[in-house]
Length: 185
Image (tube, rainbow, N blue to C red; front, side, top):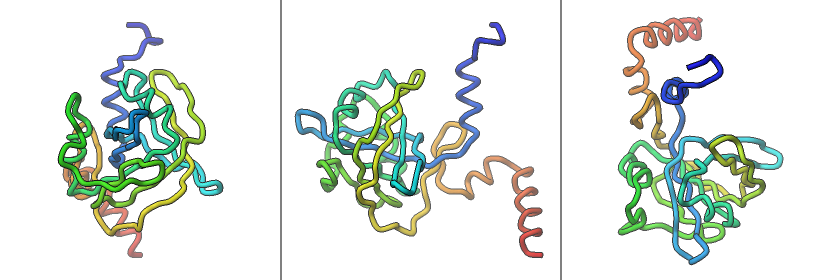
């Protein structure tokens, strides 16, 4: 392997060291059926205008549906929704079987129990390497729930920030204690 080539597994593992939240992005396909998938590639873009982004693998069987949907919902998962996250990360299954949801903007499924849900309209779509970037305009967001978020770090989802501290070991705890001591001065 030359220096120009990238070991994609090693890169994926390195990128996984950055803790992110976990979301389920949903929409309605051209046949009127709900679609959705688990992502950790959600980010704020702008406050004025209110824009967010998320990314989807170009090999996703749902790519065409999300590209053609006028609206989608970004459901930011709480710590109690790990099972839901796993369900929407698994293929092929009927991800919506037995689930209760409400139709949001453009009919996109909105789930209860989330930290927050953003109802958005597709603004622009960009090709970027092996993924597609969806930049979306926030039309509405739910009341912000005082819930711990579900986190992704180094592979599996994590229940809370405390689990991240436990997972990264003594050096993290020492660093946080030192930071805490400085903040108290």
